[in-house]
Image (cartoon, rainbow over all chains, first blue to last red; front, side):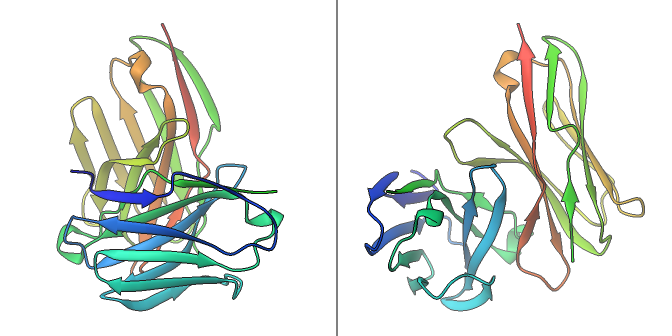
Length: 113
Length: 112
């Protein structure tokens, strides 16, 4: 009965590869987010989708492309991975009827070698 | 541009003590403020959400206060336990902005 789930939990890959991270929420929320947590543990928003529509894109390289097939899913595809992409990526969701309180997934630790 | 700061970056206290974590923000036009805890290698767990119209929120041993005019929030933890050891993050949502702006976090260690 996990509220926000992400797969995979760990991802180790080489520079130049393309990879995807998947996120699903079963809370009935209408807004989903991707955050990046760097090596200093600082969390920063990357993208947000509301009802499958992109509403936030925070100066993220074009190599990152979010895709929301429906309100319950928000996937993150990364092309041509670079060493600096190594981080923990968190998915989150919220709903305006619940004061936009955000619920986070367990994170995906991406290591680029 | 909203900036959120948490001081101190790390705090160690003996078990059983009451403690206060601080969060300050530069733009007082906030919609709400959320406190999270993050355990090592884990995701974020929402602890309390306090609306801009509220002064405080309580959940069990936790109490969060909000003073918008001074740009401050505190998280009070009563009768601390070793299980409270974690990193505590505050995050602010501004009006007209969908995103949360996070603070830098306070790493709390409760000494048994």
